[in-house]
Image 1 (tube, rainbow, N blue to C red):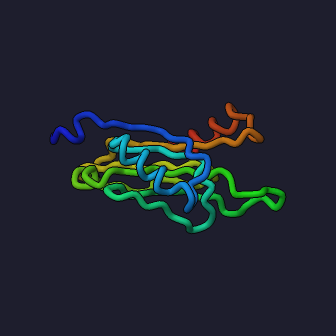
Image 2 (cartoon, rainbow, N blue to C red):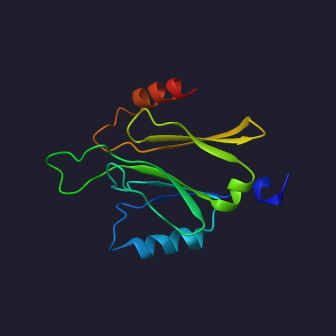
Length: 140
């Protein structure tokens, strides 16, 4: 197997809002990490908003609506996959049933070899154990 997939570099960022005002900074951070896969949470994106960073494909799961009392959107998760990985894997969204959860499947020769999940739980939903058990039972 090619060296690019022998050792995958995976990073995580809590971006606490990806806006027009900070997009160049965020792009620079993602670029500097140079990881194969970068998980991000708290994108604060809603509906069909999308992120773009050169040399990466973004898979996102945004909030469907902003709470009526919220000053700005919150939550939202995503995974940046470096484009050179797409030469080795067929990547697809495996599941996004639950808000704040995104699971990607990585296939080689029609065999799933990796399943990567990104999860965000707001501080209002601290029932982590119960919620995560429900999510994992659903996905796996």
